[in-house]
Image 1: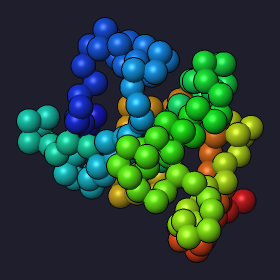
Image 2 (image 1 turned 120 degrees about the vertical axis):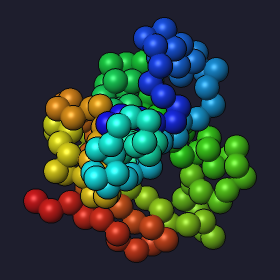
Image 3 (image 1 turned 90 degrees about the horizontal axis):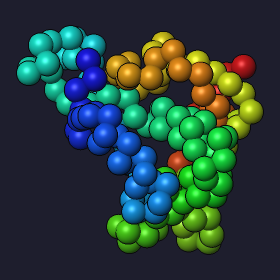
Image 4 (image 1 turned 90 degrees about the vertical axis):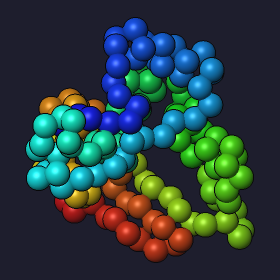
Length: 153
């Protein structure tokens, strides 16, 4: 199920969020990446825990719908997801320089893929975006200078 915090709400609410992203009212973007096992989510809506897959879909969805269509530059998207949150919360992230964490992700911006639950690496597979074709998939991720993900070809 797609029970999450905040909930999806009405079309008007979602449109207002999009407008806030485009006009700069919203300062940064985060996800409700709160994965739960399939058995936990396959309960009545009132008993199921909150959370959907977010970390694995956020960049490709935002890149496809905001950057590729010309609403934002790639730098703006990266700022919303990395630099702005780090600045707001006074974290030593969101930049590469001496004495900062070497947390980087290399992304293939040209390869179109379909969002498929069997491709997720987290313990959950519930997202309302299954079947959507998107661009911008990670091919390598490093955390503190160590490779933690490398796409298999």
